Length: 159
Image: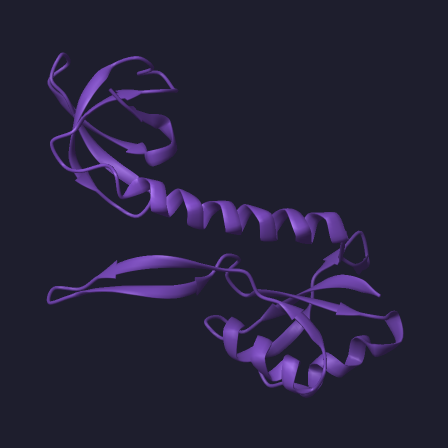
């Protein structure tokens, strides 16, 4: 049994994954939570981590079963053979996603107006004030330089 990568129709990853589960195929469709903003509201959506891709765990002889599901386009190929993903790589993605959820919890301690220090990159050790906070980035005001920058939340530490 190997993990293969399926290319599926755009925006049908979760539907394809649930249909594959119904026919007895082991599926992994990693998702993340994103906040989408419209003019009248904000909404948290569960979106696929890899757009148009789903992982399936099958034996070589069962590979054709996936085409019973509407939305499956083809297998992803590498060097003329179906791409195989190692179990360790799937586990790494799962653990990364679990850690990412913990990071989202940590992000809630930041508030607009907090003083922070940029921890990495070309502006390392510069002091800044949080202006806005997004899902994975924040807008910072660097008073010393008179500029506003967007930084990854991972690149910032509280003063």
